[in-house]
Image 1 (cartoon, one colour):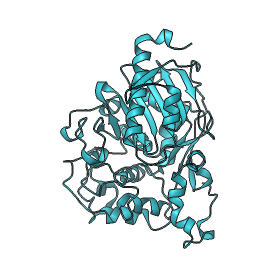
Image 2: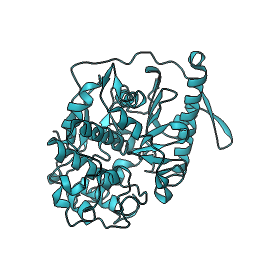
Image 3: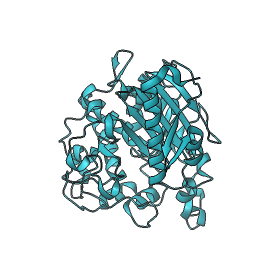
Length: 396
């Protein structure tokens, strides 16, 4: 574990300390911070394995346009309008296109993935179930973390957490002081306790009945994983997943400055864009790589489930966009595609039927942006349609 900034040498009363979260997240700083989180916060390494598997294929220009807002736009327009920093496209397991428009980006840069980390955490839960470390999705949080007895999470099951349907916490509003997510961010950066934030969250509904997007729920999933496996999230990710995918580089989680230091399973994973694409390949190919079942097949299928009424596309309510549904820590789309999402424009888009995987890292000016999200989805779906329809003539 490494730390570049020692919080004991900072002045808690300084304006920088009060505003550090905003400074890290805002343009123009975020193009640098999103590729250098290990310079800003403590980290724990997620080690790659001894075998490197280069992605087959090679990058070529991708002649695709997409319609948005009444205009026909190019990928160059997409990157300019949505502040793309990295863009990787795989088709049928091969690299067909990559570009790095970000000022500090490149094939070896490791990108802050924010809530896309949740989708990785879900993959680890599926592996832990197959390993027998986790008994069942009907297990309660307190079966693994009895210290949450007496909190709003006492009756919550792992299935509730995975569906963002715990009934705990408020709507995530990053720009409103005092909300759960703002308190969570402040605790991660050293002002308060991350565990206290989760323990103090209020029950706002019955478990399993409504969708309410919650990084707190995802954080608790990570803690359940650690308790069940007896390993840190980084160590379990390395042992059971990252070391097996032929990754280009070690990845890392940044850790909370507050103690006990903890990985943020809902938002602190950092990796190269190519390596994130390798995770997408697993999902597109039923969890199999080179004949080895790494993520259980039934768990991969569960990530595309669309038969829960309050998680259906268009039914998520105020904490989700109307073109998405939700399943197993992934956002679902019409036609069988789904995507991992992170604030400021991080995407791991998977269309299993078309065998297309697209990674887009970005540095949006704000955490959420419905219009930029809609435009990005329109572009990703246009790429998928062209690749699946006329793949041989696509690349010059």
